[in-house]
Figure 1 (cartoon, helix red, strand yellow):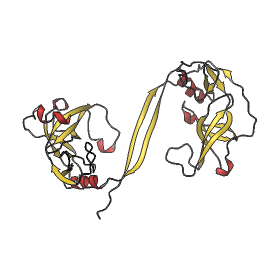
Figure 2 (cartoon, helix red, strand yellow):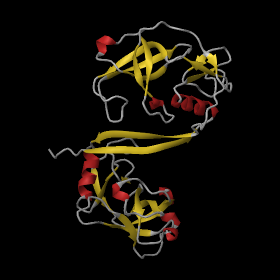
Figure 3 (cartoon, one colour):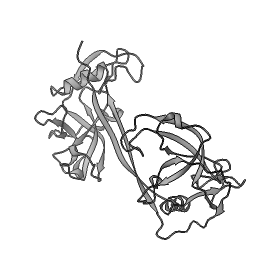
Figure 4 (spheres, helix red, strand yellow):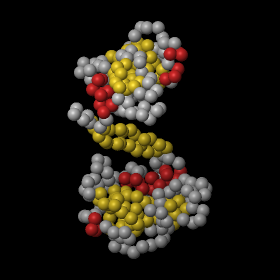
Amino acid sequence: MPDVLSAPLVVEFPFTRSLGPVQSAFLTGLRERTVLGVRTGDGKVMVPPVEYDPVTAEELRELTEVATTGTVTTWAWNPAPRRDQPLATPFAWVLVKLDGADTALLHVLDSPGPEAVNTGMRVRIRWAPQRTGAITDIACFEPYEGEETAESAPHSGEFADPVTGIVTPARLDYTYTPGRAQSAYLNALSEQRTVGERCPSCRKVYVPPRGACPTCGVATAEQVEVGPRGTVTTYCIVNIKAKNAMNDAIEVPYVYAHIALDGADLALHGRIGGIPYDQVRMGLRVEPVWTEGGRHPDHYRPTGEPDADYDAYKELL
């Protein structure tokens, strides 16, 4: 049995968004150690606040300050904190209904163990020493012995130097294990070959192979070597440099294209090099360029052949 391939993969990007008046007031308030909710048309106070009533879709603007103490409504223990989670030691994820609020806020509770956590326990906010206008300005919740209060007070939402935008990092770490078909595809690439699989029903050749025909739904097993040359079917011009060590040497703008390799019935994607980005076009004939020791083509470059006729690749757009 061949070795099972696997590789650690990371998908990561910064999500940048601007804030409306409600979210701006909420996050700026956290910076100032003030928790704001918003009052709905039926008098309920929602924390964290939203800009539109989830029931009526009514626009909401009436801000209300609530307490920094509250009650745990439900919880789950996290015995092994992961990268960038709020606490480095084991903690509880908790939903906390702050005093004066009618909805619960998701955050973490600093606790010595799950036996010290229970639904209904009283907690209070532990503020971060340095606050910037983010949900992490609440470092965590901690146990609190005080009584519940239902007091809340109207708030203008006005602060000096309000927070108007945030950048939220998004990251997914996982281990990818390809199946039989893709393992064969990746092993062939390491030999500077490209293989697909032919459907026994419709006879189309799919690259990269998935082990089954996406059209007919039947298993595929017959390997077919395709390319190495192909035709650009569609493409896009990339103007934003990726934060990736592998792409540090690639200067923008550059072109990423769908390429129909000769003999394939599905286009794969690859970077186009060896030609100015504004000269890349549909129908351009290209070939792979391999780097020494590389396990996949570094990019595709023009072959010098005449452009392919549109009818030759229109079904692969």
